[in-house]
Structure formats: structure tokens, C-alpha cells
Length: 160
Image 1 (cartoon, rainbow, N blue to C red):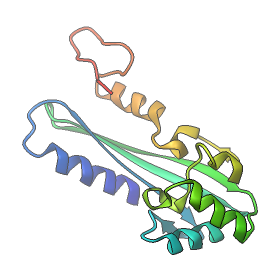
Image 2 (tube, helix red, strand yellow):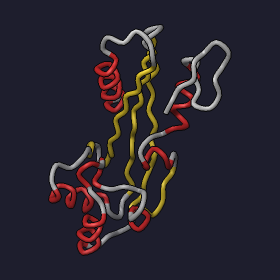
Image 3 (tube, rainbow, N blue to C red):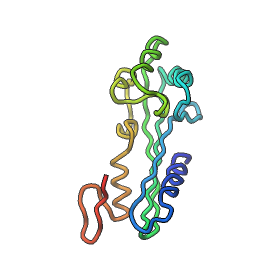
Image 4 (spheres, rainbow, N blue to C red):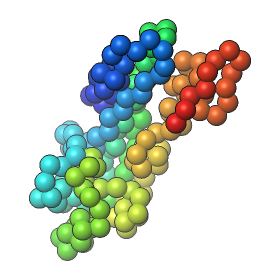
């Protein structure tokens, strides 16, 4: 899966030369009609993305890759959340684009703040759409012997 490959490549680049520590890489994209929508490059591209997404259900995928440098072990996974955007007029789309910076968001929208106005419903992990699937991260860290919540005997604690 593309988001898992991208997440692993990001973590591998950051892990160059490390002998200890856990490196986290992540990548998110929006999937609609068999095509990936990443971050728009221009406001016009953001407007086009929102026109395509409005009134429809799409998937938000995030790939997460962990690399434990001490033991040279990988853990890679992904999460999918289905998001339904309500129907929007062109006026609403243009106004929404003044409320957020769409250029740093996959699919040109954010669920937080003004996103509550345009998102009708979600199925799955809210935090995946918000920015990062922390519950999945915790499960992955536990597979490597770490935890965001509780240190285990003889095992270090991850820091956020």
C-alpha cells in the first residue's frame, strides 16, 4: 500500500546512522474514485479537490512505520477511515478555503475547526482524519516493547 511505503521511506531516511531509538514515519492521503488526493499545490487545485469530494464518501488512509534502531526491527501498518462530506455550493467551497490553509492538508480539508461544517459523518478512527492515528501507534509501539502510557520493566518509555 502506497501510504505504508511512503511512511517506511520517511522513517528510513530519518533513521540513517541511528544506533538506538524508535523512529516514526507517517503518510496520509485521501482516496476517491480509484485515485489518490494528496496535498494540493495551489488554491485552484484545492477548490477542484473539494468540488470532487463534496456530497460524497471517500477514504482517508494513513500509513505508519516504526523502526527500532537498537534491534533493527520494523513495524508498519495503516488505518482507513471513511469520510462523508456534505453537499457544498461553490460559494461554500470558496468561503471554506478562506477559513483554512488547504495547501498542507491531504484532500484540501481538515476535520477540525471549520471542518465540522463540511463533514457529514465518519466511519472509523477520528484521529486518523484529524492528523495521526495515535491508538494504532500505541499498538505498534507495544509490539516493539514500548508504550506511550506505561514503561515496562527493562524497557524504555516512548516520548511524544
